[in-house]
Length: 378
Image 1 (tube, rainbow, N blue to C red):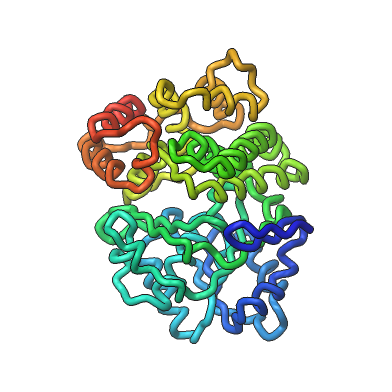
Image 2: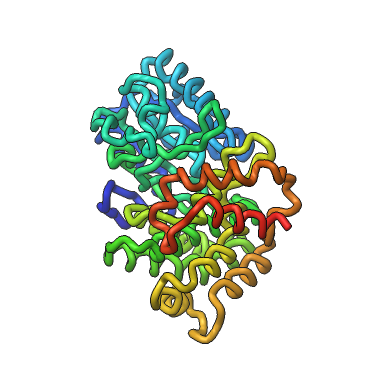
């Protein structure tokens, strides 16, 4: 089994879930709250987690109602269970949504409410101290990389989807077990996988200087492009599941460079109550248009990406990724999702305020965001 120490400690391999007792003991967690979602309950994966816990923890407190885009209301509901159970740590179990929600619970377990005061764009990062409740992240998708990420994305009660960012929010331990992916259905495999691929691409294209992160991003992009289609076509392909989970982890490890306009828009769109849009699907739709938009502001980076992904240097990167999305049956536009035209300026303004926008290689304006969005709606 590979043990990785980079920002936090990661246990990575088939069967890694069985080692969770070691992490609980290391972090001195005796009464954990498990944060998960209804889909995990339906699959039976939660039973596998509980059975891996030490005997004295086989009846843990559980919050299982994480929405697909985690909300402030859900944070408060989970926090109430944490306090009622006198919990002393959190296990985030699922995709990026439960893990992000678990981070917010760990934050408010030790920091004074309201949650909004800790938002990055409101200057709240400096208010987040090291006194965050210990958190173990166990991803069940190869997607967000939240298990090693420093951010939690939460939609507040007023509809703003804000980022809460601090090195203190990086889970103290992560367990990446590709066994947990083998039952993931094709559509979710595709959507979460393209989310991970987008992380690698956007962080690499960020103009911030961080060569180690660039190297990790290129490696992750190559793994995901080569193996995601295999994982979608055959969920039991163990090599494909291992490689895509590693690619998703690498995408999370590169968040230190910042993201870009794809995530600026997908965060703004993901904050809508109606329609409720999946983050990975949004990134899939936005990836090629934003690559075209940024094309003259990235130097030789598109060529370096194509080399890492095994593409011919003469091909068009955006076209290659559109074709990849078609092969794994992901949507190509937003026109069928019922986004009202009158919301376009509001979404554009929220995208401008998003923390990801600052690291887009091409400087953004609300008008440019509006243009990108209208092109996807028509």
